[in-house]
Image 1: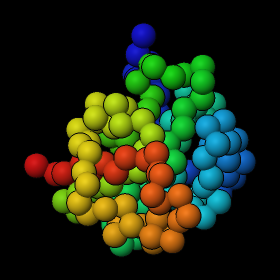
Image 2: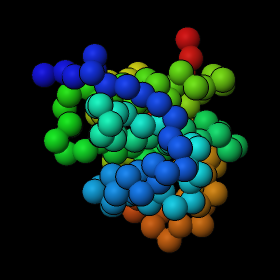
Image 3: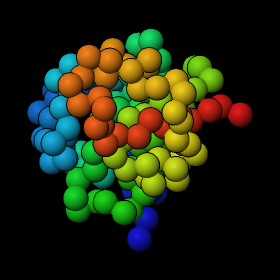
Length: 142
């Protein structure tokens, strides 16, 4: 069952931060270093049911996607990623993920070059780099 017609995607406001952090913590995601203004929210009525960050630093990145467990497998995550990709002004958007199958549905492909340590400073100095379980994926504008 898809609910996408009942979902509104909007930019997060400062007073949404507690709800964002609560959703992220459900999946042990850390968004502390991300500005609230980087987040998009999925709402059903007045309830926040999902979030994703779209970050522009050295690269454009889809980051910290989380959907309330009651709303998973209903198109919320795909709608959030699609909305984040619509914000892109470049030719490529990257993601680090342990769920590559999810990102493939939105047109992302796995890449080995550039490597994660070339793309992200925090990967370059990470003690887990050699045993990292995250895949690097890219979406390219056609």
